[in-house]
Length: 58
Image 1: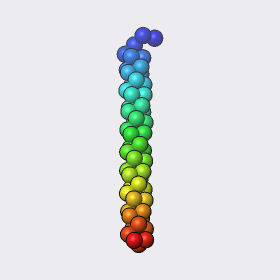
Image 2 (image 1 turned 180 degrees about the vertical axis):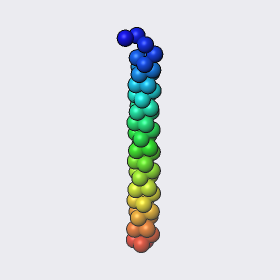
Image 3 (image 1 turned 135 degrees about the vertical axis):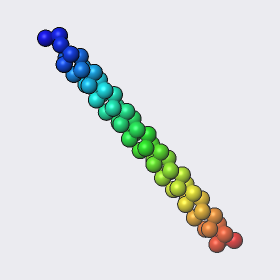
């Protein structure tokens, strides 16, 4: 039972898991980056709207 196939199966599973975990981490980082960009965009729009409202009131 201890042939080369067993070793290569073990290593291929390890490589597969490492790849899957790396992909999950990459997707998580992209999601966080997009969320941060959306938050910054919303803040900028809110500040712009507040500045326009203030300019209209004076």
